[in-house]
Length: 78
Length: 184
Image 1 (cartoon, rainbow over the protein chains, first blue to last red):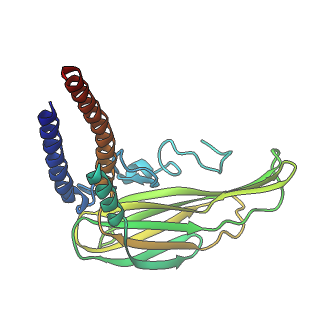
Image 2 (image 1 turned 60 degrees about the vertical axis):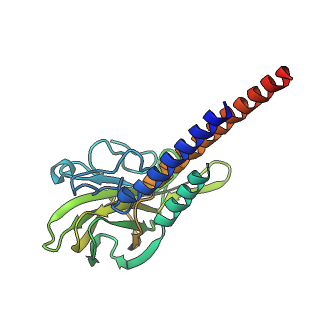
Image 3 (image 1 turned 30 degrees about the vertical axis):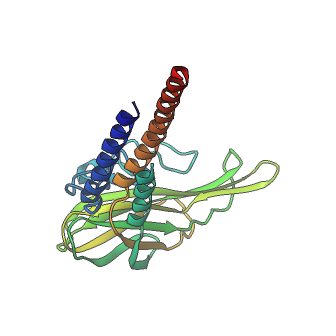
């Protein structure tokens, strides 16, 4: 039983180290932020805290601050 | 679990960087740049700040507020639009037994510039009618070492997985010890 537990721990640890190393690929390429994979790509769902981004000029046109965005302070709104 | 902590430290490393540009623009906006990007997939942190001045007089709610929507556009060397961003800044004050003031005077975002080259940022603002003397726009751009997201998520998952595994491992050891005691 103990041998099985040790084997599982070693396998999981190895997988974790491999995954950790592999994650340098997306990290050094700016994964998750607006512009990753092309200028038309928005930020990933894992990125929170950043402001809104727009990837088409036509969406912005004719609407203050883009679609569905409230403006006018905390009492404001469309 | 150790790899989880190392992963979180790696994520923290990727959030560090160096300031490449800091500019002040008129309240109605302007152009920032040129920004030279030496390598593809460079991560930039764009920090935008504008202080707002409250108009005199109060609304029917007994409050006094103003706002500014500051939008930015990322432009290439030919000043062609690539993508945009924007955020609302506001300031409000009132009286409910004591005077209070709340405000949001800055925002930031991280973007990945997929190509090397020369880029510009163009800012513009939208203000409410009768806005009084909004402050200048301050833009600071920092080049980051990369994206912290992959290692941050992996770090959290690895720590949780480590805790779960430790729990089950200790249970397995206890069961084994119990069986050997009964056997004796």
